[in-house]
Image (cartoon, rainbow, N blue to C red):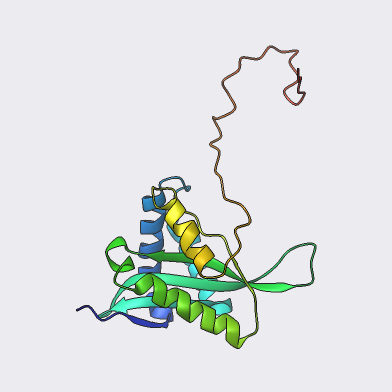
Length: 169
């Protein structure tokens, strides 16, 4: 049986966290390319100012979760925001995903903070992911969508076409 240890991330984990987040991006397939410098800066800032956990199997990182502080622009209420969450497929059913979520909930509860989680999935497991979060007490408030920059270029235009006007009916 594989022993999965959930622990707080360390500065030495930055490059392995980058590897995991590249895997997450590749698995989803719809996200923009991961720029190494920008990505490692983001991970380092999150390690410094947030709460980052890793799922560790004999020194190998197989999952990660990060929380940062978040405030909606129109509200004084602060949340802990789920900045990222990823577990390699073969370790999801082994308990790494649930262990990370449980540790995340304990941390939020210790700080009496609500959680705001934007968790994306672009594969067949999207409905399973939604249901799993609802069973954990989360309220579904929408979804994330990405539209490519070429999606709106199907229509030919002339020089006198107002691209910002809309005709209905």
